[in-house]
Amino acid sequence: MIKKLLILSLSAALILAVVTPGADVTCNSNTDSTTCGPAGASTWAAGSTANKFKIADCTAVGSSLTGVFDTLCTSCPPSAGNVYAKPDQTGCINTPTAGSNVACQQAGACDNCGTLPQAFSWTKASDTTNCVVKSCFAAPQPTTGLTDNFCGSCQKTNKFANSYGTACVNPTGGNCTRKASWTDDDCKLCNAGGANSTNVKASADKTSCVAASSSSQIIAVSALFLASLFI
Ligand SMILES: *[C@@H]1O[C@H](CO)[C@@H](O)[C@H](O)[C@H]1NC(C)=O
Ligand SMILES: *[C@@H]1O[C@H](CO)[C@@H](O)[C@H](O)[C@H]1NC(C)=O
Image 1 (cartoon, helix red, strand yellow):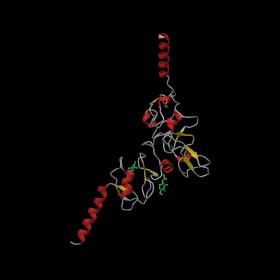
Image 2: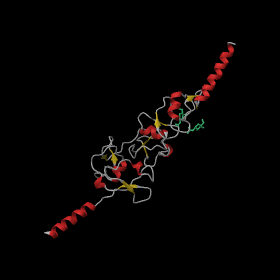
Image 3: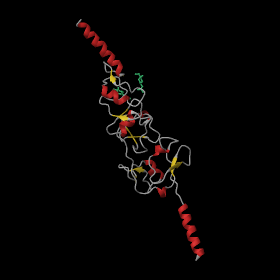
Image 4: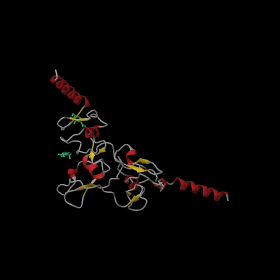
């Protein structure tokens, strides 16, 4: 009897000790696993190869999932082939949520579409002019290295990268690198949160954004000029 109990508890301990590490995945940083997104009720561990991460224990991930990305699904597919996040991000399916078309296909390739954050990739659309981000849920959208092409493919409203590539924004007059049609609102939106955040005014000719003080100087000078007309 005691022997049986001993064997039983030993095997229970063995079962408890079994962990199933996930497959290696690429996140948007080689060193920061928060760029992988959620790991369910498990955690991210260093991958088996350099610059990768893997879920520490797939049996611990659980089924009550929210906000998941392909990283979780690829590391611990709940069933074979379901390596992409569902469009509502509550689980995993076998097809990616591709981005919308960006007209950057050239010579049958997407090499001209610009560099994406490393967890993302381009793939050709079913025509000869466009490419799409293969999966917009590859990993959480990073806060560096965003481009107009990335935002244009993966975002519904915020189709342009801000001046620093740190966010996708929705200026009314076009992209944040244009040389025309600037408005104060677009200047604020494109330049917020970075080195040029004081450039909140459109220049008089609308070709650039300038600091509020330089346009108030113009106003002051014009006021002086107007005043001189009355003296
Ligand atoms: C900041 O403003 C300067 C001067 O207008 C410009 O040359 C530079 O490209 C801007 N940098 C960014 C990141 O927008
Ligand atoms: C930004 O917009 C301007 C004006 O529409 C355009 O000429 C330019 O090519 C655009 N830049 C990029 C990077 O798409």
